[in-house]
Image 1 (cartoon, rainbow, N blue to C red):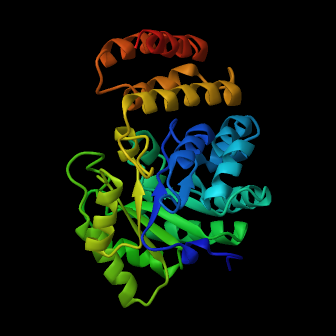
Image 2 (image 1 turned 90 degrees about the vertical axis):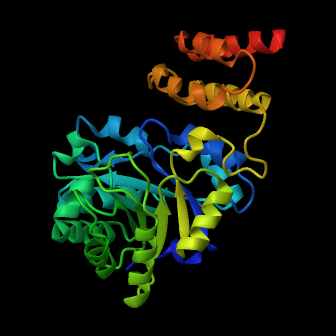
Length: 331
């Protein structure tokens, strides 16, 4: 049994920041949490980490950076009452058990999440993530093994099907193994990120949960464009919570009291991001990872295109910070 299922204590609707590869590291989570208004953001997730890599002697260090929680981030999360969940993926229940024991032993996380939704073909090919929708018995064993190994509440981020929609059958399996929370993306694996997320399937999962008298939390995911949109979707589709993924790329102040702030506020946040990334990672992480963020911060003002082009040509944080400094001098 979980020692403390925090999911049951969250206000409704609760909001979570989605786990995203090379995006939601400790630095970005710290920034998003730091700009969120009190009570607007409740849970953040790490980047997803392979249990195979984590348990492999040579791959351990590379895998562990995905689970790093800096002291600065921990301080911000604690101040704002935000929980942190480690997301892991794989296909072998025994490895989930072993990895969960180690991760829980560090006493850093409030819960563990199992990725059963990633649609990337090279991962699906290894019978992991969204491929687990096709082997529900293995998926059930993984949930049970992770819970037994960690003693933490175990959630699952998943989709409404693989090649076609199987929400009722699939979610029933996850509810039967007492999953603490289910984050349901309203697309199949086949859809990838195309088409429109079907939130009617989220409501179907909620109704199924209620029929089975389960206390599993159901969060909807997909196409949430703003905080207000998330609130409306939670109300309309009766979800306990909402997970935000790509929406954060459209507005880094998504959870702030005043979203869509002016370009000077965005540039200041980019400066903070560069400084914290440099301090936290130095040369441990490739600077090129940051280039995907430039469009988030630099847009919708005169000279934005030219500034982005200059930033894309930079080779390190110092050069990028210099671009911002020169812009501010001439602004």
